[in-house]
Image 1 (spheres, rainbow, N blue to C red):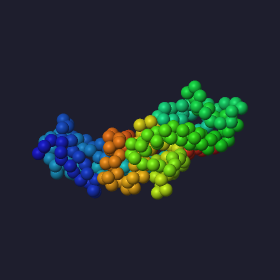
Image 2: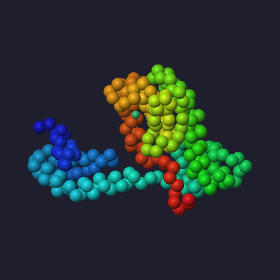
Image 3: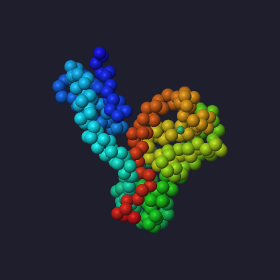
Image 4: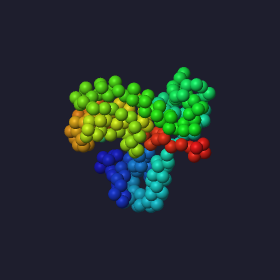
Length: 242
Ligand SMILES: [Zn+2]
């Protein structure tokens, strides 16, 4: 048997076994994405590993439930000076200021919120993501559309709930404002992905082929998006301050 290729199963979950371990005691780990992995010494028998895995069932389900609960806790933002807000992958500190300027803006590395707007500050900050994000997206949408040979009727930034983006049959492409918190390479992934849908509606092989032609590293970006996505702010206010 080749080392490192054994796979056990537990209730439909597949558990790869790394037999390069040096300890007689098998070790079970759960990765960030919830996948399981066993590490054991090469001379431990399969039946023994299967018994070990079965004995860990309650622990596994407890851990998976924990992860599930954790991933659904929304990120909240408090409207106080010093709170961090991401834009294009960089963190900017919020500064609430007394100013005659009645709009949110990015100045000298700070996200400025005029005190006059602070009662509905979260809405104003979201509106800022929409307008600033759209200005950033427009020229890039033009570039990606040319590469993908599509002709979007409009590009919009809006609240799309749990979706990063959407491509409508009318030819409009919509991007969630929360996407603008991601690094530029990941925002461009979401943008190119939705534009590609104007030619291929479904996630079939033709869709991924089309995307891969213009963005050869799309798979890597897709994985990075899945990793960072859950940690983004989606507009939830901190209850202590609202
Ligand atoms: Zn899609």
